[in-house]
Length: 182
Image (cartoon, rainbow, N blue to C red; front, side, top):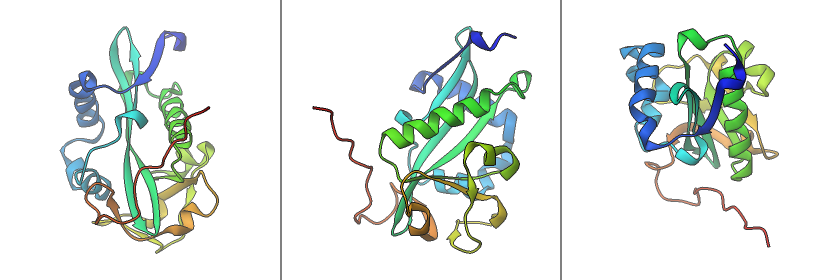
């Protein structure tokens, strides 16, 4: 396969059925019990920060990002990231993560967090969150809590229980304001 045949695009509602199938294939029915999924079910992901990889108009991979809060911090939760088996190990997932990180940075988000494998995500800039700093609604291996800090001090502000920003009590937490160029 020629990677030039892969088109990366913002996610749209038209992609939902294919994305659901890819996530089912990648994670199975057990995905609904995972701590990260429990956070995601508290509110919608942000389509402006979520992307798909297409080949011949068919979704072959996707990544989503969901606004979250914890303590005095806010971030986006990256995931799920899923790639159809026939297209794994070609760099498509890594490219989607890079696109998602750049979108979060451009939108003014201070950090991106995820639950994942450090050997995969480390080269993309993710580092372990200090043990015990962040909690999730369900069991999670603390060694798999990773973050990229897009603004200095952002990860340190993420403390305690992580929640979907849409279901968190209304406080000073909101989506970053992007200033229009003049």
